Image (cartoon, rainbow, N blue to C red; front, side):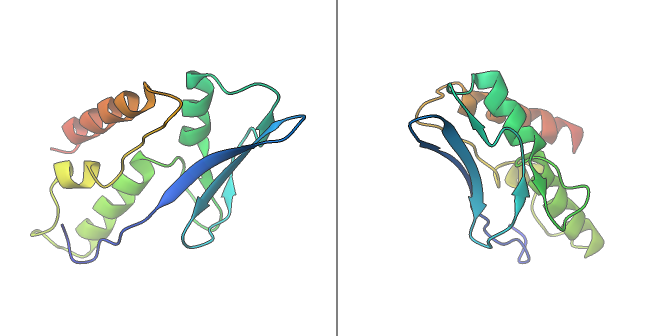
Length: 123
């Protein structure tokens, strides 16, 4: 991996109250994330959760949208701007982001397929 790539941990989670399920997106840098929905009465469907993950906006980082390919693209751009031709391959950058869930078993496969498509577009 390139020397400039830093580990980043972003987590989406939910809290159940009596009336609603509340959703949160947090990272180790206390980044403010904008996303919808903030809550729902019923659990999100797989499609709704994917939509939430893919539409998250990062306050102060214009044009960075979503929690997966946006980070792959950002690391690729940093590497290219630095002129680092010894940096990470597309495969390594794709593996920089993983998505798993205890409750949505198909989520990991969905984002693994997205990563494979990203790799194909960056060969």
